Length: 281
Image (cartoon, rainbow, N blue to C red; front, side, top):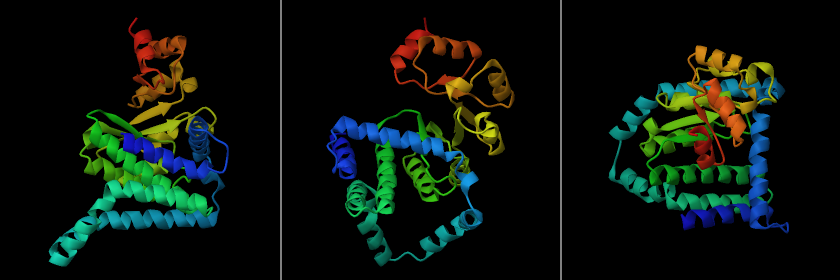
């Protein structure tokens, strides 16, 4: 864990190193970035032009084609194995483990150093995937993995990497995947259909999004609404559609009691001990 904490600090420092910014400041800036990215997701497709929609269509077609030929490709590779290919696989295996974290940090640092945001963000995506793998391997718990997306419908590489980490960790039955990006949930379902997907939404989105309607359209197994969207009518509507409800993010005691009285299925809280104490009184 100390090694992971050090790598996190090294990953963040190059991005803010030019400023007089202490560690708490760095953490705050990163948190603000994630919140800003999440809020921009739902409306991203509304800003796409014809070229971007065409690219999305082409990408979707490519994903479907690869999905359809996945078994044949795997069989072909196994039939043509040799000592050379086995040695190559052995040589590159460490780059899927501890060396991957180190390479990710180097990508972030290099991207920040040469002001290449694409390289920096690719390093961040890789770094987050590796951290997820470490966490899944370290704890025997149930997980809600949120896929962060700042380019709705165009996060295929991150989605694929997340699915691969969950599958390789053997935590398919213990994991729930959520996202504000409905396209990411659709893409993830193609990789791991046995993992439940939860649609996240908030009160600043357009009506079809903040009502959770999109979640039903894409076949989500659960809805994760912001607590301000939860009313008696909305709970009845979501439960009537067969969707469990996990609400975010609630620390206020009165609001916790209100949500419990409405019959929500779960609550995200920054202070779990406090929430449990309030709800079990």
